[in-house]
Length: 214
Image (tube, rainbow, N blue to C red; front, side):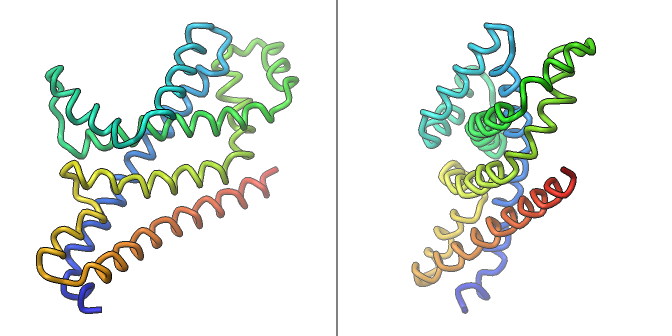
């Protein structure tokens, strides 16, 4: 217990760093995921090709490699940003590919008659997708989206290797002070457990609410 009490400030700042990184990256991933999912089901061939390429490349690229590309590659084009922003870009873009495919699977569960009815009323593709298709698709993918967000929270651990303050990176500071490495990681694991359980509880609540509204 003294590992936690003696280093509470270090653990707390690391936990807040992981929490904030998860929230901002999740917002970016959801925004990009919705857009790319729209591209994937778009009747416009270049948009479908872009969406397919985005998902294929990002889902098959190791996240650590993507971090290196963002952190080391963008500055070569005179794009200099804080390491936190680089981490958000890497995590958000990577996770957006999984959000996209989750949403697309939900879109496929919506009866085609819904889209045809919307088009018969004169709605554009964007209006049909945003007002008719996605709201219905969302109901069937709440649980899978929760799993994607939990994976995102755990993936933030990579950011500590790129000078971003987060929970896993606290072990270096605590280890240098001479504390046992086993208990150091026990408390780190507990922090991730708290975060992932909170995300799971949130999406379980959303799933129940959606089920009632049906």
